[in-house]
Length: 322
Ligand code: SER
Image 1 (cartoon, protein in one colour):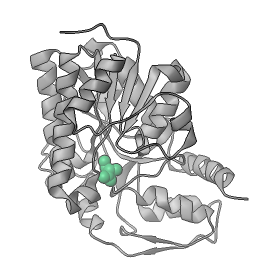
Image 2: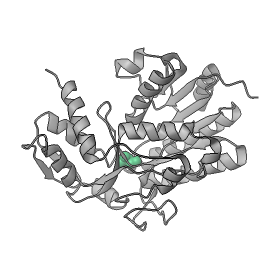
Image 3: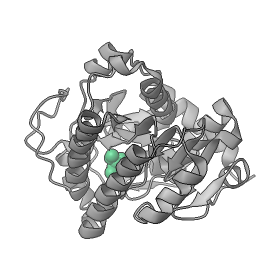
Image 4: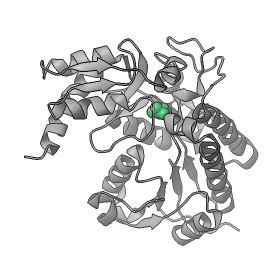
C-alpha cells in the first residue's frame, strides 16, 4: 500500500564525500527540516548533526530502512552509500553486498512506498580496459574489471529494469572523480586529486599514488551538485537514459594538477609512488563524451582545472588552523 509521500527528501550515505555536500545544499534550498540525513555512522560535522533530522541507518538492514522510510514518507531518495573502488578491491564480498543489496533494498522500498524519485550514482568505473579511453562514448564496450565497477554496471542495469518494470523514476549519473574542500573521499582511486590540495595548503610535499601522466576524468563538487540537481529537476520525458548518463567536466594528470597548484604555491613538490590503484586508473577512461547529458537535459559544467584550483586553495586556506 502506498502512503502519500510528503515533501521530504531522504539522503542515505549522508556522511560520505558527496552525501555531506548534497545534504547541506538541499537543506539550504528546501529547508533543513525537509531533508533527512541518514548514515551508518553518526555525523562527524556539526552542520549535518544539528541543522536537520538525522537517522542512523545501515542500508543493508531492510527493516530499519523501511522503518525510516515509513516514518518520513520521502518523495525523493538519494541512495549514495557504497564502497569505492580501492576499498571494494580489498573487501570484494562486502563491496558487492553493500553496493548491490543496498541498492535492491532502496529500489524495493521505493516501489513499495510510492517514492516519486530515486537518485543513485554510478561511476566512470563501469568502463574497463577494453573501453576506448579517450572521449569514451555513452554506449561502448564496458567490461569493468573492478568489484566496484562490476557492481556499478550491474546497478545501472537494475535501475533501468526497475524503471521499465515498475515505473520507478530512478535517475543516475556516471560521476568522474569528485573534488571538494568540505569533505574527504574514502577509498577511491581518484582521491589523490583531493589529498594533493590538502598537502599543498599545509605546506607539505605530496607523495602521489598514481603516475604523473595518468589522466582521469574529474569534476569539482559545485558541478557535481549542479549536475545531480539538474538531472533530478528535469522533466521525466527528457531523461532518455535510464541506466546512467556519462558526465564530464575536465580531465587531467597528476602532473597537470601539480602545475595548476604551483601557479599559487611555486614551492609545492610532488613525488610519485604508484601503488595498486594505478592498475585501476589504467582501466578507466581518460576523458568522457557527455554529449547525451548536454542534449537531453542541458548539462554544462562551470569549472575547469585552474578555476577549480583557485577556488579550492582559497577555501582550504580559510579552513587552515590559524
Ligand atoms: N571516485 C571513485 C573512485 O575512485 C570513482 O567513482 O573509486
